[in-house]
Length: 323
Image 1: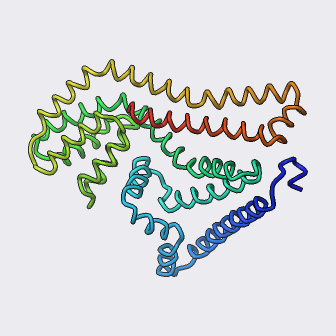
Image 2: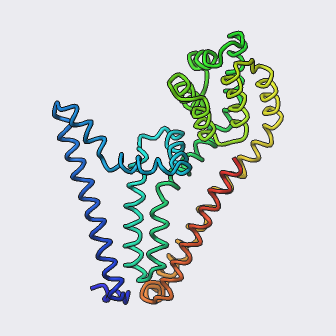
Image 3: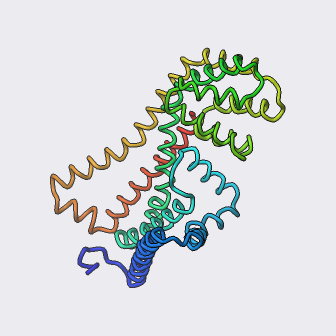
């Protein structure tokens, strides 16, 4: 059946495809059965048993295992928390593993080579992380222009409170309801973290990740000094506001560059779709023969997808550097 599509898969590759397909099917069935089990448990009154099932869930096991790798664990945790996402770290990793296996199976089936399996596994496996990263960059760009008014508002209430407590000034700033979204949600998260048992370093690190630009790092450093040493931060805040006002025009130019980078990320996909669409429209049989049936043609399409994915990663990296 597979050879009728002109793929010419070897026996070893066919075995890999079958194994990958069965593994993906098993994981999907496992996830469906687990959801049904949790739904039935939620209807019962056995709260202790429900807690035990939650603790032994595969997502919790993955989270506990990933906690050993501090840099990666901290990076993914900060990313999810800065996005205020309802997805847990274990669920994100479970999704990435599932998509990696599915991508490897699809790559072996479509391209019949280890290269195809590796490329599609890498692209599909990292896609959830890239989607979250692009969503965070979009939120950072929206909140970029509102950061200066938010800092000015906090500075006003900090002076009114007598420069005694940063937490009090932050609470009054949010209570007055004069801060605009999405900046308000970022400051609310900072206030919530500071009001709980979270340390100031952890709370401010999530704050800087959510905003992603250098001014947020300066502001967080000022708050960190005020919270740890208990000194007044009115003068540093006033100097920071003056510097941000002077850099406002340059900041608008930087936003335009970020928008150009995001447009350039998707232009390569657009041109590839147009190129293949025109070829299939003019001569469908020849295009199918050269791009689908011919291994060299499939390899060329694979290389094109790999270069597009690499440019997409470069665009995300440049956007993060520009922030």
